[in-house]
Structure formats: structure tokens, C-alpha cells
Image 1: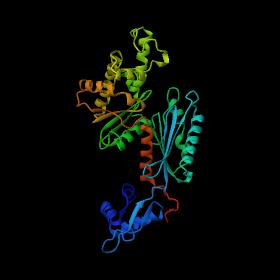
Image 2 (image 1 turned 60 degrees about the vertical axis):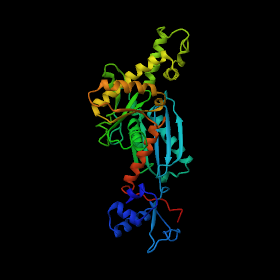
Image 3 (image 1 turned 180 degrees about the vertical axis):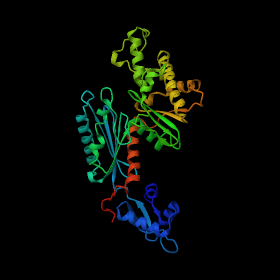
Image 4 (image 1 turned 135 degrees about the vertical axis):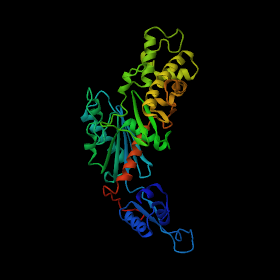
Length: 389
């Protein structure tokens, strides 16, 4: 019944009966229990509301969106973006805190996460006791218990320094997830994979990460590493999991160091820190033929990476997401042309995300809402007294 109410607008008991298949008595008992728990609000009946109908007036109900809040956090290496939302997913506050990547010890990161959470809750005017679920996305594999495995330089555990334990006193439901997996959740909820059962999301940041959905299920793996991209180190023609923006920057700087940029070209003589992938993409978009060569190279690289996913998981769609995605139209177009030659299976549709630079933040809120919806009764949640009476 709670699941029905969560998805519905204002409804009457007959609507709930039809949707759940329950008897009238059981339906009314369940609705009354949800009201007592503070999760449902009863509105004036149809006759009082001026919607006259013959016969006994129907009772009218609605989910109390203010019964609790959820928190979604994109805990990237260089930033923390925190969103506080009501039970319909409407954002009440959203804040971003920049981090010093040269000081990312476990202790400092734990302190930053708590600071970001408290600040966002204060901005939303949401008391800490109203938080039902928190979901945090981190740039590390995460297992089903919210833990990350060890890594060569302990990077993964610095990114996820026991966040489940840290936050368990802050909400009854805590969900720590890989950031690319949350990007995949976002695309499935409100992005380019709505209604799609088999897809992959390439989070094309400083390094590639991937969220993979097969038969409508998000893949995780024993240690949360199903989308870990170290495999690209072993793919001929790819050689590293560095993202497209990083690779373009490396290529143009290498060309400059080798004297390969034509004299008089806009890139010729630029300071080292201005020779970036973004500059190359901007020139290519304006029709520059020299920059177009880098775009062709990046498109070929993306096609090969997409072919790895196409061969292993047979997705219908592969969506390129993240902050850099907004400038990759030409790169994706090249990759679309080349992808069928890289595969024996039918080539998946290759798309650019429409969710902008924050798919992880969107996915974190979506995952927190899903966890709240499935777990509210399990954890014995009771909403605050209804201000509407």
C-alpha cells in the first residue's frame, strides 16, 4: 500500500483497492495504519471538497512528502555535492563543497562528509531526526555491505573511509554506492535509459567508470567491481582507463612538445595549461580541421571502449555521461560510425547523457528515495506530527 501511495497523487480507497488487489477492509486498515505512522495524509472527502458525487463520499489520501527527507551525496575526489529532497524527490537544498585533493586522508574526508551533510540539512531547514535515508556515491568499488576493497595506494578506502559506519547514526537507512553505478541509476530513472532493461553508462570523468544494467538489474560483483575499468589497460588500442578529456589533453600537449601543431594555428604557442581537451573540442566544433583530427582519434577510442561493453554485456544502449559529455557530440558521432565494425553482435545505440554534469548526484537522490520507499516500514519509521492536522 505504501508503494502505491508513493507513486500516486491524491487517491481514493477504490483506487488503492484496484491497484493492490486487497479487500476493502484490508485496504482501509492499511491506509489507517499508514496515517497513524505519519506517512499518509487524509484529505477532506469529495463532498467537503466540493466534488459532489451521489452516494457515500470517498475518503481521499496522499503520501506525506514532508514526513521525512532523504539525502543524496556525490562524494567525488575533488568535491562533495549534497542534495536534500522530500519524499517525492523535490530538492529542498543542494550544495557543493570543493575539496583539497592534496589533503584527502580518511580522517579529513570523513570530517568533510559530515560537514557537508550538516550544512545541506541546515540550508533545507530539515532537522537531523527527519532524515530517513542517505545515499553516497564514491569513486571506488563498493560491495553489498557498503565497503570498498583495498587498492595499491589505498585510494579506494580513502574515498570510502568507512562511510557506512560513519553515517549509521545519522539515518536508519544508509546506502554507499559506486559513483558510476549511481549515474546508471539516474539514467534509468530520468535519463536516456528510461524503459531500457539492458544498458551501460560510461562515466567519462578524469578516468572512465561504468555502471552496468543487465536484465533490469544493476551489476555489482563480489567486491563491487563489475564496472571497474582497469580492464581497459589490457585492451589493444585503448591501454588505459583515463577519460576522454584527459586523453585529448595528453594528445594535444604531446603534439605541442613534438612541434606538431602547425604555425599560426590557434593552439600553436599556447601556454601548457591552456592546451586542453576542451580547447580542442571547441575548435573542432567551430570547424577547425586540425582539431578535427583529434576528434576522429577520440571517436575511434570511444568506439573500441564501447565495443568492449557491447561484446561482454550486449546492451541496447551505451550512454556517455559526466561533466565532459556536453562537448562530445562530434566524438560520439565518429564512434557511432565506427562501432558496428568493432562488433559481431548488433551495435548498441551510443548516446550522450542529457542529465548535465551531475548524474551521480541525481542518481544518489534516486537511490535514496528507492531505499526509503522499500525500507521505511522495515525500519519502523514514524513521520513527525502532520502540520496539516
